[in-house]
Image 1 (cartoon, rainbow, N blue to C red):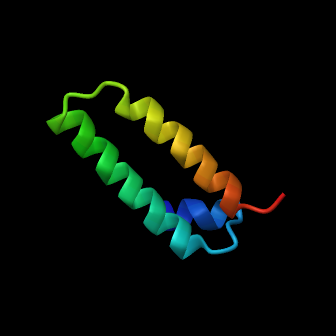
Image 2: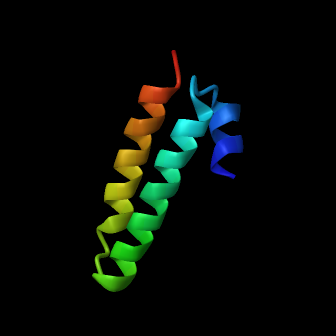
Length: 58
C-alpha cells in the first residue's frame, strides 16, 4: 500500500519512501500501544509529511 501511494505521489524513489513509511507506521503503532503515548500519532504525521516532502519533487 505504501509503495503504491509513494508511486502515485511521484516519489523519486518510491521503494525507499515506502520502506521509511512502513517503519514509521509500525514504530508509531508500537509506541502508542506499549508506551500508551497518545502523541505518537501527531509525531508520526509530522515525520511522514517531512519524508514525503523530501521524496516528492516539486
